[in-house]
Image (tube, rainbow, N blue to C red):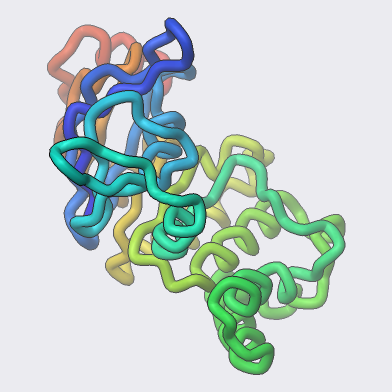
Length: 250
């Protein structure tokens, strides 16, 4: 579903990603862990072309993201074409980014009606179904200001799912939440993983990574230091840098 080949990304003279190559198979959950500033979120944003790669190539479901190849060179697509590609990739951010003037229901309905042209009746039925799926059926008519952080993040997940994506990206979805609210969001993500959704998750929640991920990737300094089965990496890391990081977070 996701294939990164020698991906590098620089901001000016600062090389944030250095020759990243990895794959995520259809239906897999891959967790990216590592210290702040290691390039995890930048890599995630490159997957749906919120950031342009400086070199290398990224493909989702066999299609290059943000570029087309012609004459052996990559040419950036028109923004409209890139937006069309992004419809298949759901993204959940640290901050919930809900529209404050819309109810939970309206937030989830917005993209299917505006982007996909779904009728309001169909979009509403689907939105209610998704809000029920994330445990918020009774909060459909609440505005974001009247929802807890955990509830807002669950609405954000429902909103991403409303576009029927083939891939879900999560950028530290629980880091902005109070500790007691983290579990309710992780529970929704666990259920989503059980349905076979392909997921790439940047997280500091090692328990979630151990329980749900198929692959754990430890990044530091813009490189992939270690990759493996989560339980094995967490219990018996092979690299000194991984050991030092895990000794602080486990």
